[in-house]
Amino acid sequence: MQGQVVDTPVARDFVAEVLARVSPEEISDIAEAALGKSRSFQQLLSGSPSDLGRQELRALLRSCFVSRRRADAILDSLGHQEVGRLIEATLDDSVSLQDRLDHFAMDLERFPEVATDLPFELLRFTNPERRWPWTRWMWDPRNDTGALRLLVTDEVDLFGSNREDTYMRVGEAVAFVEGTARAAGLAAVAEGPFGIDVFLGCVYAVYMYTVLRLRMTQEFNRIVPELPELVRRLLGVHQPEVPSCP
Image (cartoon, rainbow, N blue to C red; front, side, top):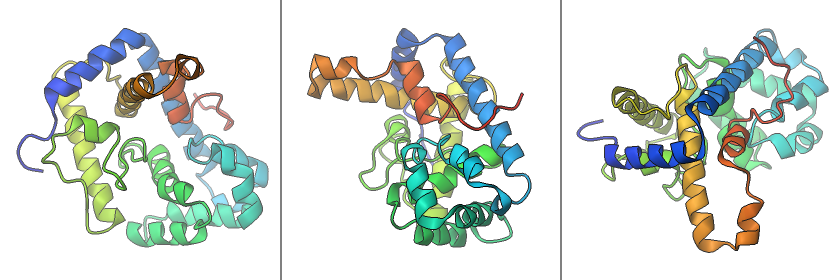
């Protein structure tokens, strides 16, 4: 990406809003919880996911924001063995990512939101050193909105020729945001591989609160979780069901 990628003044404004709602210690705690989830996913999926039982796969699906409420419907629709095989195929780096994404979307066509987000969550949490986050709340290409879109300049084009190419562009933008934030000493970015995930979740939460405050009644706003809980829910670490690993 050429030129100015991150809108640094906007990023600083979001950091100020985030730190007004949550402490750096809580941010670090959420990042540590995400790291624990990653270790759990790596342990659970280290063998053959196709050999996992229904309850193990249900716990896995319920530990992901996009599939938490649809776990039973997915398992009932496909059968737990097929879900396990689909996850195994998604993590198979010997196959092109685009082919894996196409396969996932075809098998989960009844659950389009899950088909869109879940492959990237599986990739991210099983290999955080090589894969980066991408969810619709982070960036939704259907309407070009989300936390990442708020932080990069208008000139940044996140659309690729296919989903794999788009994923690469998103990853490049995420790297710029993380690098800029750390270089600027922005305290809302925790250390560790999931610091950027937490930061993007916080940015989205602040944005959501702003929209709700403008559009919704005070009674409705009061039922929305506080920022730490909301970010934990977005990252799938609020009341996780996969056993945690130290």
